[in-house]
Image (cartoon, rainbow, N blue to C red):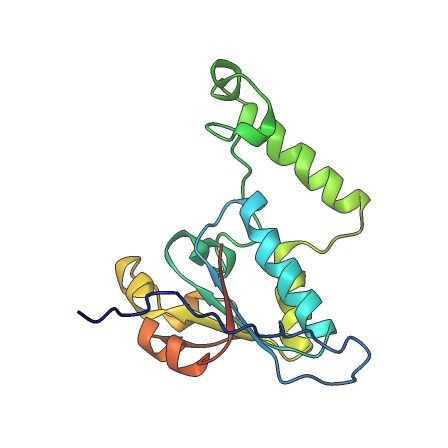
Amino acid sequence: MTTTDTTPTTTATTPTMPDFGAPTTDRTLAIICSKGSLDMAYPGLILANAALGEGATVHLFFTFWGFDMINKRTMADLKFTPVGNPATHLPTAISGMPGMTAMATHQMRKTIAELDIPEVPEFLEQIVDSGGHLWACRMSADMQHLSADDLYDGVEDIISASDFIEKTDGAQLLFI
């Protein structure tokens, strides 16, 4: 009778740490923006801007409701809806009352202005001017009957999800 050693073997690797003092990096960050509310627009934009500041290559892919961030008709008027958002610490009954979305949106815009954070259109412009790449999802454009003329001018193209995956091969990927 023979026995087989079933002891698992592990190989320790040193985590990759960026050199924050280096002037350039070969890092690429791909951010998928899938939500179009005011509170969900900023995480991707802030991360993209920070990564560009660190010298990374940045690609943002706007899909489904994230199209509101790059749609010329909606991008300057995103809303913050407190309904169903536990982070607002509002009771559900209150957050659904008429006028709450307008009040929450007003308050968030006021705070954004006080902190001198750019509005969404200006943030997109800043990202493009810093070398960031903006892509729109082909399927989402087709579903919403939108063309390149309907989108923010800094969007490079309307591409398929497969094309985006190909363009960002090896990138760190964030889905927001």
